[in-house]
Structures are given as C-alpha cells and as structure tokens.
Amino acid sequence: MERAVSDIFDQPDDAATPLREEEGRALKLAHITDRAQLNAAEQENIARGQEWALSRRRDWLTESNVKSLHRHMFGDVWRRAGRFRTHEVNIGIDYWKIPVELRVLLDDARTWIEAKAYPPDEIAVRLHHRLTQIRLFANGNGRHARLIADLLVMQFGGARFSWGAINLREAGGAQAVHSRAQSCRRA
Image 1 (cartoon, rainbow, N blue to C red):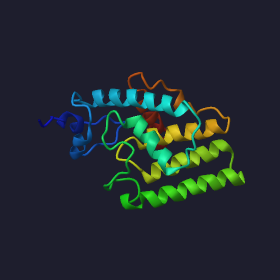
Image 2: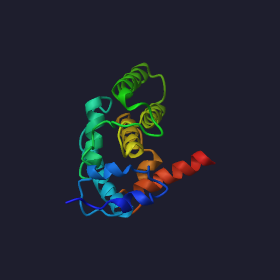
Image 3: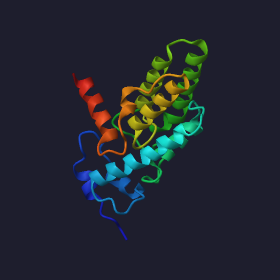
C-alpha cells in the first residue's frame, strides 16, 4: 500500500533541508505524516545514536565508523542511513566524488593530529566544516558532523561544543542548534 507523504514535503520548516518527494520511499516509519513527526522520530533516533557513540572509544577517522555513526543516528527512520547520497544537491560536492573526498579529509585530519598542526578544538571544527561541505548523506549531515566533531574533541580530553549541550529528546532540540547557526551565518 502506497503511503501518503506529501505533507512532509509541502512545507519544510526553516531548519530542515527540503526533501525530494521520492525520498519518502526511504522512510521506514509508515506512521509519519508531517514534518513534526519526522523531526521527533529523528531526534529520538539521534539520541540513541549518540548513546551508542559515547558507549566506547572508536576511531572516528575511518569511513566505516563515519557511516556507522550515521546509521546509528538515523537507521530507525531512514532506509538509506549510513549510505552515501547518490544524487546531486544544491550544496555539497558531486555525489560520485564523496568516497575520495572523505578519504582525503580523514587523511588530512590524521595529519593535523599527528603533526599537532592545530589545537584539538580547531581540528574538530575543521573536520566538521569539511564534512558539511562534502554532504556525505541525503539527510542529517549537519547533525552528524556536529556529533563527530564533539566525539573527536572529547577524545582529546576536551569538552563538547555548545551545540552538543542541547537535549535531543526535547522537541526541536537538534534543529534549534541548526537554526541558531544559520542565524549567526546571516548576521
């Protein structure tokens, strides 16, 4: 039975990347009929993904762990979680360049760490910035990049960035951070 998902795509909120209608087929949850339900489901899944990520130390500078984190953050909601996007978007590199550009970024980050080229928080921010420029996935790139930056700076013994202080289980928590960041960029 075909599920009606038009409400999700008609009026996306200001903090979300607009979704293409064909992406509705990638949703795992048939009960989602509007953006608020989608945001709530994603927030709950992200909170579980964060708990998983914090449960043990991992090397976040590997393609497999980058993908695995995304899968744990979004895999209960999206069928495509943890898989690189396969279409062009209005921002981000060409989709077919993603594996190579990610490898270059991860190698760069390892070099920055080994050479102590930058302070740990700057390395994490540089990693975040380039991840969001590449846009690895069809959805959740900013949230994913923020968590990876937090995890990396925490491995250095630092504190999470202020964006990580938001309670992801509260309505609008994850997207509120994105909205504030967008406002700062416009100012």
